[in-house]
Length: 163
Image (cartoon, rainbow, N blue to C red; front, side):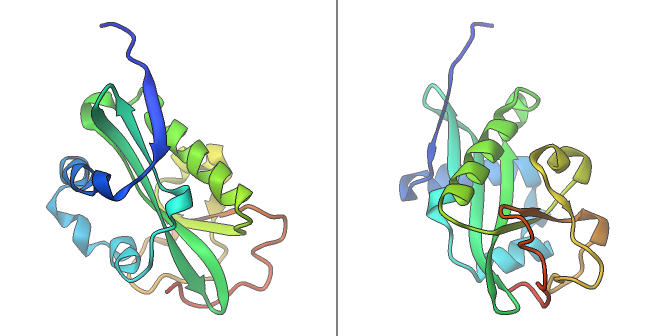
């Protein structure tokens, strides 16, 4: 197979339908029932940290970031991160994560939360949310509830429900 270059850029409104179709293929119909999905529905997208990936003209990946509040503190919720199943394992997810984290850090954000596999996300600096700290507004496996501090000590004193 020829080497196809990857293009990563900010998500635009024109990408919405293609991203929804990608999510259908990557996550299936049960995606709407997940607690993280329900939380993202009520927040506004952080456009500066939401990206899409293309190979030629085909959308092959997406990462979306939503503004949330934890207690009284602003934060971000990352997800969904999706890669076209046929392109899985080629570094597209990592490239999207790195772009998103860099943009959030550059814009002065302090915390990014997500629900996902710690073995995958720890390479980007995510750690389990400490017990007694912030909580999700629905059922979530606490081992999959992760946070990235974009500023040292940003989790100090952060408690309450994500909303």
